[in-house]
Image (cartoon, rainbow, N blue to C red; front, side):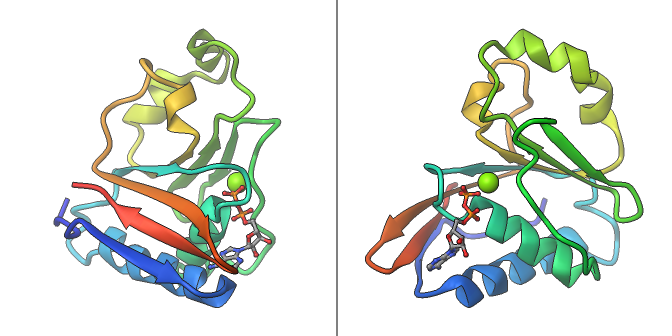
Amino acid sequence: MKPLAPSSRHLPDEAATLAFGRELAELLSAADGFNRDAVVYLQGELGAGKTTVVRGILRAMGFVGPVKSPTYTLLEPYDELLVFHFDLYRIADSRELDFIGIDELLTAQAIKLIEWPERGAPRLPSPDLSLSLRIEGDGRRVQVHA
Ligand code: ADP
Ligand code: MG
């Protein structure tokens, strides 16, 4: 994974969060396919903007349909794009990940975007890129971790 420098940025409105997602998509879609199986952690409380970042990534990849947190199904696969969107919010025990065949999903050649990754530990690989979001004023702040 080409490194994204650790940084912190204010996102004044939803459009800014979507634009940030588009930037990430560029990194993840590098022409050499280098990042095509990246594991991306998206942390932050409910409403912090995690799914909006995912929507920005998917829009940049050409997906025009609705993008929602797969809170009940844990996983929304975008098969044509080779992107898996996980939301582990409802997981009580990381062993529940076995029911969705997590090991196979994680070894697939796909970008894995994971909301609430802390709930899936210790069944998840360490991330190639880790982000956290939080509410700041009327907007959000995103932090890119080292
Ligand atoms: P999460 O997935 O973290 O629960 P969402 O991405 O669903 O959060 O976003 C929750 C709400 O926050 C949405 O209504 C979204 O439009 C809004 N939102 C996203 N980014 C921003 C921002 N930078 N400023 C203000 N509102 C935002
Ligand atoms: Mg969400």
